Each structure stands twice: as C-alpha cells, then as structure tokens.
Amino acid sequence: MATEMNTVRKIGISVPRDLLRAVDSAAQRRGESRSGFVVRVLAAATARARDREITRRLDELFADADLQAEQIRTAEAFLGAQSGDAWEP
Image (cartoon, rainbow, N blue to C red; front, top):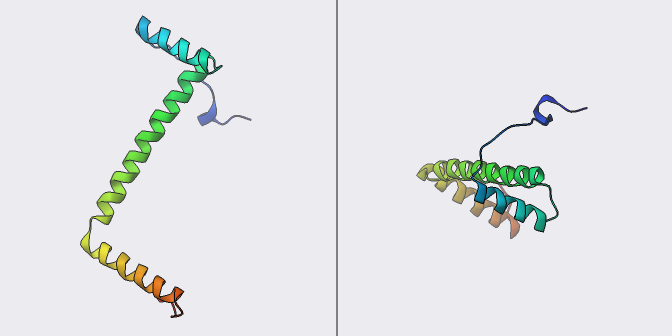
C-alpha cells in the first residue's frame, strides 16, 4: 500500500529541446526510461542539497569555541580510556 508521500504523481514541465535530447540519450545509455532517469537525477540533486544543508549546520555548530573545547576533552578522555584509564566524558 503506497503512502501519500510515496504516491507517484505525473507532472508537466517545459524542457529545452537540446536538454531533452541529452536526457533521452543519457537515459538510453543507462537502460532507463526518461521518467526513471529524471526521477533518479532529481532525487540525487535534492539529496545533495539536503546534505549540504546538514553540513552547513554542523559546521556552524562546531564553530563554537566552547563546543570545540568540550569535544577535544571528550576525545582525549576516550583515547585515555583506550590505554587503560577509565573513560569519563
């Protein structure tokens, strides 16, 4: 049973003729339908955009000097525990 989010929807888009030829050619080389190729490329593009946003947020979070110092202390404590000391975060 398909959920609302996974229901396939047909859409209409305008694509320049040269781009459509390139899409069709790429899809054919990969043994995909035009629709399958476009869906795969759109999914990859949106995943990259999501990943860039996650990375941006993590970079922003870890730019905080206090958080960096805490992370270093935790890593050092963990590494010390590996050499026989008790690990205390």
